Length: 372
Image 1 (cartoon, rainbow, N blue to C red):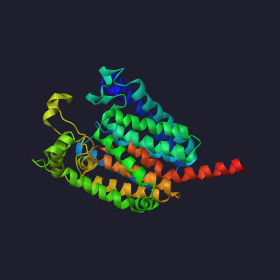
Image 2: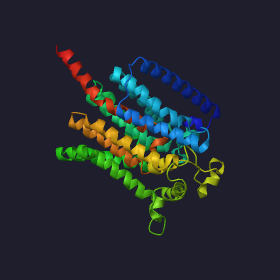
Image 3: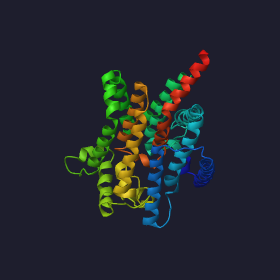
Image 4: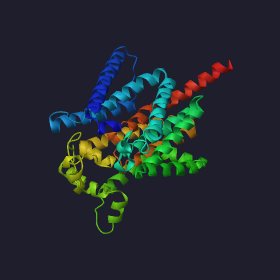
């Protein structure tokens, strides 16, 4: 949350609270695994393996875990808790997630906005109630997906529409390139998605599209700044400059990277912010993966995404499969200019995917009970 940037005590309390929750989640999941009541799907195992790989690389390269505790341990905990509760009662999970997202997005744009709290949450300063402005494209996409599930599966269509509307308003509010990319793609996909053949092409080609996007991302981070690309660097708020600096670190430790938060990128503006120590945020998911875990972590991440595309293929209803697919495509595209692995929202979306077919089964059972 944005308050953590201004109040160190709040940040410490928040970290302690999250740490306590993680311990409780792990104990609950471990107990249910011993009882053989918790089954982790194939994709979830890949996600846990991704986190374990990042943990081992961090310990190897740095000797300890300093800043990366939340980044390394929150992801598998999310996977485990979602796997547990979505197997038992998917409707309650989606309903709870919907309510949390509604509250957060409402507070961000209606209550704790820059008009009422300009000294804290001025968008031009890049800090808002939800945290850094770069996070809104990701939380917005998750909210759109969850809102769509409400509209399709449950008798909460109104709540789902409000959530989608709030998500779009928040993305427009922060005025980031990632949010504009997400909104533009959503509009294009929704319009083109009215064509049945287009929907079929997207659904059948999803694994190949994801692979192509990752390759495109690799190409982007290797673009050199010169007179021909300087305008693009300005348009992307200096991202080409950041990528040029980051790729130099990658070349020095290509196979395994540096571990979580193992390297700081120094830019000319670093002397004015964050005490001049630079930053780890790579503004590109593939570059972030290469810095954190090199080729090894990047390959595991790619395999993990392809595994989740298999889960989407199991969705029987074509429209639901299409809209679930395009959210993944947009997420990965947003990863061109943001580091998806730095926040948990993309992983929450991924953790839901294996259980989307269960939502349809629950809806069908509910319809049968109402008709009997």
